[in-house]
Length: 473
Image (tube, rainbow, N blue to C red):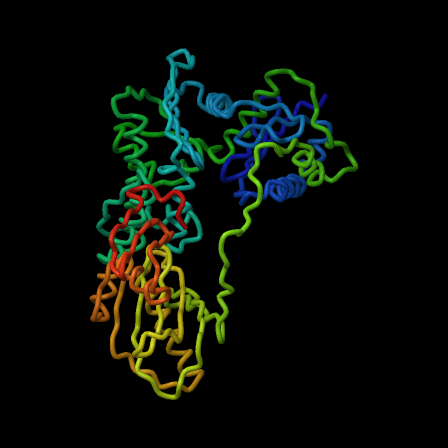
């Protein structure tokens, strides 16, 4: 019988795997973000195993699964992810007394007795703030490749560090915008995020608890030196970093299978079948839940606009100036010469602008992602509008400007705007212009949603979400 096992951990964010022999030695480990495409990630795992010559070693071998979706791998034996973490960490650190597990969507503290027996654990709530996916999300807002890039910038930062709330993604987004408006560098903001995340972990898991040493940190965030250093400062003890942090769950699953002596083999791992096909087939063999699904949405009570325009184009990004690409729409052809008003909405997620004539008729609109850089976003919009006017031979003169959105005061002060309006007033004014009889406005933005009532063109009531951004863009 083949005494080698392959453990596969399918989590909320990534798919990891480990090949383990009978002695508990990890022969190889893998981890990759699956982006929701599990079959593709399994095929990639098969190719990686083959490239390292491990496909033949796995012929007739056994497979174990863990993680949020691990129980959907056909008939593969499944193990609880917490048990997998404990088994893997204790294999590498037999004397461990405390384990900090910080994964893609959860974090947890395990405590053990001096004899290595499990004592208790504490964990995060269902909110993913303070986890690996939270850092990935913030990295995207800062236009960084991933959380690893954010971690490198944080570790190298020498500038003053702003305070960033990390208990909620909405608060974090607000703090990021304010920090950028105050001139903090991306490295300093990254350091603030890592420090805030470490404080959140400490407050949730360790405050009021006796965290005995040796302490091991595992999970993807263990690879973030800025978070580890701040946790060491808060706990007052050094942390040992699990070298198998990215695939500890998968390694633990393989070890538990080998411990059990279960000779059950996963179907499809026969010689003559490509390993990538065999692994992808395991997911295809899994059962599908078809009972607890909602019917498809249908538009029945209203018409949906086609958003037609005179001309649509994409103004390219300018990486050297860190300016994003801009979507450009021309609704009516420009005359050769025209005075215009400029309206700008600087939101936390996107930044938009329009040009109107003196009567308020919209001629052009532009849209781009704010990505945590409101100034660069606004500059990109201006460059796109300038190019649009030049391409159509139009001489445009901006005689007035107004700003709204979360960055309205910041950008408004830079361009010396004639009007700086709150979003509710701006929404109401535009709605009345488009539909004079309007009495109700539902607005769902990047991080907030509003319900506004209007009478005779005046706002009579407005209600919005207070903190949580769930249900928004």
